[in-house]
Image (cartoon, rainbow, N blue to C red):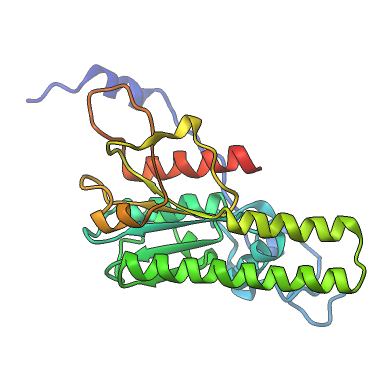
Length: 265
């Protein structure tokens, strides 16, 4: 007979763990006597609330201010509050299970967009449904993605330059014109950044992320494709000190996104 591990036995006898409740119950239990916010006759009527969630409760992994809100309302609020100016792209040639983790991290740091390059299908389990709150786009190739992204940046530069001309013509304030000029400078400095460990890459610890950028992430193991590295303006790596060549792809994406946030928050 197998002798149980003493640590396992002690763990069972400890009475742990006791977890705190996540989320809220049905509206009538949480707010007895209060009119429901999905009732048009209520003075507190708010179309952002989801009737099904009000009925059943909301145990989703969302911030408290989004309790009972519909997915569409949460996504719209994130847009209104302003997403950060970086975008992330993941090559999906190997159906990497880390893609879900990357999408979840992109939501945590409110990336402007998430791009999936390669086959449309990917494992969504690790994303914990956060892809529903993000703007996720699919692309058949890295070449198509980068071309579209550069064209979009060029279009935004042209639009901002037109705004600058109109501001001058209408005698806008110095501060308004300066803000437009700063936006133009930021767009002109936009870069495609590959995250990989190759000769010539620069350490992320000393890299200054441009405010507007597209970060490229590869699959676990092979890293980024040759085409992705060819199209990138910069290649950045995360310094490591152990015995393996690279850290988990999802962890690398989280480090890179947080490095951007630390510089631009």
